[in-house]
Length: 139
Ligand SMILES: CC(C)(COP(=O)(O)OP(=O)(O)OC[C@H]1O[C@@H](n2cnc3c(N)ncnc32)[C@H](O)[C@@H]1OP(=O)(O)O)[C@@H](O)C(=O)NCCC(=O)NCCS
Image 1 (tube, rainbow, N blue to C red):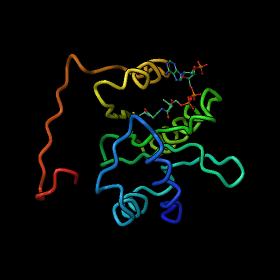
Image 2 (image 1 turned 90 degrees about the vertical axis):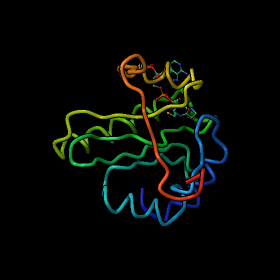
Image 3 (image 1 turned 120 degrees about the vertical axis):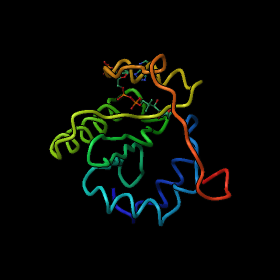
Image 4 (image 1 turned 180 degrees about the vertical axis):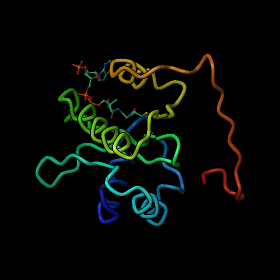
């Protein structure tokens, strides 16, 4: 994935239930993320149509997955699994040993997907706190 993919990425985000579009998904922030984490975010295309996305990066200690999605007509073909594997391989090559991701509390189909891929639900142990640094609830 490169910054040039941003328009197609945004169209896919808008068409996908279970993901939330934030200000951090605008071009400048996505380009900064991709430049800070080169080779760690991957897309799948059917011809020239974007059908899959998985973004990842790390902070030097832990890896993070974001925006894993497959277009409805392309689901159940192993696209998300393949893209996630590519992200994990890239993180592992950088020496990252553990990767986190967030899902919406009520996105039960995503929870089943992650469990199928062998991820652990940490809901009983971890509570995430967040704080805005700008006066924008959609930052
Ligand atoms: C979740 C999502 C990314 C799965 O994409 P996909 O390309 O259809 O998934 P894959 O085909 O790679 O499936 C990989 C495995 O997970 C399983 N799986 C996929 N979706 C599943 C679900 N809802 N429940 C249970 N298992 C599921 C598949 O059966 C497959 O298992 P197998 O490889 O052992 O046969 C897709 O449904 C999606 O885009 N959902 C909307 C966006 C979203 O919620 N993203 C997650 C945000 S955290």
